[in-house]
Length: 100
Image 1 (cartoon, rainbow, N blue to C red):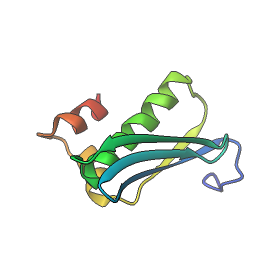
Image 2: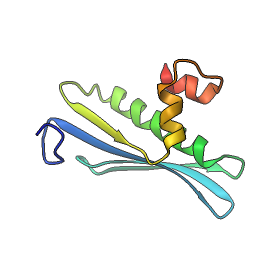
Image 3: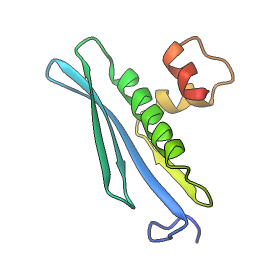
């Protein structure tokens, strides 16, 4: 099965947007190479914005590594952020940056 976690041709990445106390942050985790990254976003963000930033950072990182020949799964628990990325039109500048 091509989607198994132990398959060397599948990269699994997790994204998270969270609000803790008065601040928000975006986080990513790469299962295969144990890459962990947290991006502080301050108190004026939302969980949605943090999740979009996490997805953006994850894709930027993968593009900078020139990952090829590998299926990539980016896992997110924020349905609205996922939906914003698959819409054909968007009014949010942050999502537009992600789509480019």
